Image 1: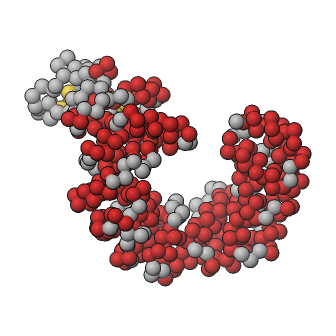
Image 2 (image 1 turned 180 degrees about the vertical axis):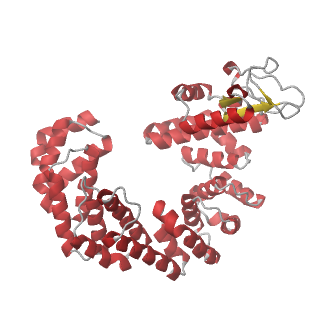
Image 3 (image 1 turned 90 degrees about the vertical axis):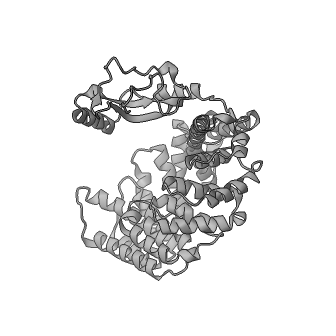
Length: 456
């Protein structure tokens, strides 16, 4: 695809107009084309057409240049000058936000008084998403100009304080859940966690009676991003979903299941019964990867509905899943493959009566081969600490593989007197990876049962 793009575009590159140049550049970004001749030609065309681009298009040009890793040159200076010129005359908040974003993403972000004045003027007009965008860009400028300074004064500090104040005031004023969720859609990150999270949860707690079947999925999706556990809010989500499950779109139920699993929340059994019935009615309608996610989420909560499991673990479905994973990006494909493996393992351990075969041995072996021998620094530190606590390093093991390649971070054993037992003790068998895949849950594969009174 990269080669075809270069071969098709290079002969006609000189005839591209300003819009075609941008489209081609973004296609290069998409397929990660690194042809030096084509890159040089596109940069030359950007020089030619830069004056014709509007703020949104300047932002797109900046994003492309970042991907191409083009060395510092006069094109960045020209982008900077154009952005500042636009900023001085623009009054539309969205345009100003885009131009600020352009300036903050240039190799040497420069901000003059005119930029600060324009940003200051639009702060009261910004919603929470826009304030978040401004603050991210402002922090980039601050780090560039004063990288070693922990606190800031002057115009940057004043802007930051004003944005924090406006955001908190806006939170207090909004008394309707739906517009608040709309502003929360992309609102995550350090600033939100540090400044707004606690106040946001107070506001959501006050508005919890406005959670309905029409917004419960959006609400759950937002909570996933916060990773904040509020039992009252989770209770309300479970109650609404249980009562109105038929009105919730079948392909969105997984959002609520994932939220509960992520936050280790156990809703009433009626919730799972309602979800499973709703899912079972639409088994033929789900995209394969989404059905795997649903099965994985239910299994994580200890539920293995036979209809769902049988729908996933059959040759026809798995063929469809393979076909889908061939065309989706690598990251989501990898995630689905891991979820299928973990679901396969859970079903083999928890539901042997379903007679689902374990078919991920080769997949797990490949994962094992790709895993580096060097543990993370944190893991090494914990291993050393365990050795000091238990007596010596051979009293503990790390990255222990158990049934169906389940990996335990750390393991040690104690005898009936609760004293550590070294792994070199002849009375305790050493794991043998050839046995991995046995169905004896709770015991490291290849190990004999521990002597009476011993615990792992």
